[in-house]
Amino acid sequence: MLTGMQFYLSAREAELKLSKETLSIPNVFVDGIHQAKDQLVNSQYHKKCDVVHIAMVCAGYNSTQSLVTVVKSIIFYRSKPIHFHLLVDEISLRTLKTLFDTWNLPEVKVSLHSAEIWIPKVSWIPNKHYSGVYGLLKLIFPDLLSQDKVLALDTDITVLADISLLWDEFDNFKNNNMLGLVENQKQLVY
Image 1: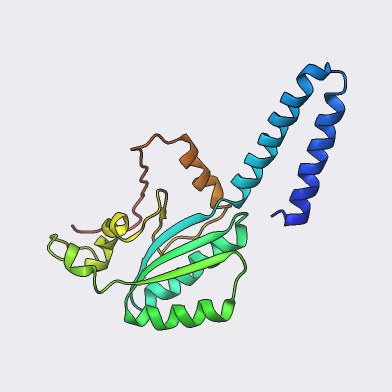
Image 2: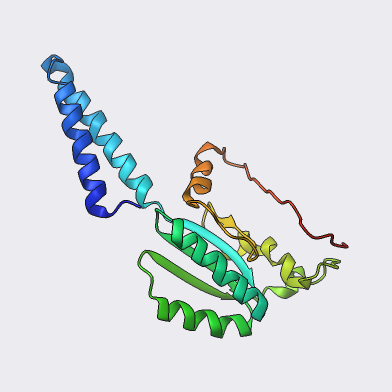
């Protein structure tokens, strides 16, 4: 993970290299090259500071323990600021609020949303999933969140690389694209 100073040095080194390469170019093109170089450095800087929004549903003690594992794995590998949007029940709310308050992580924001008010929106859907109605609450993320881009993750995963690699795939999307992946390791009855 690059620190702010390392990023500045890397950008400065690129700028010096570009300046050396452009010395042989006639003055007519210098302003355009500097402008293009500034745009490149600025776009790289803004891309580096892009906040990764991650949404998860967490209900009960077991789910809370799993969520702590996935959060730690995300934070361990991250290179960008993270904003966790957590849809939680009362049990998880108390535990997670205390946890994130005591961790006090830099460049990590957490929004805790009460799941209880959203349950009526999905409780009518027939469901035999082991997590009950909480397994359906991901369906309300578009109503709950105002972000254009969100990674919706389960709590029973471990992230083994920088989550921004997945986040950056949004750059390849068109307006109405979405992506969903799952490989169920458990045989479930629906």
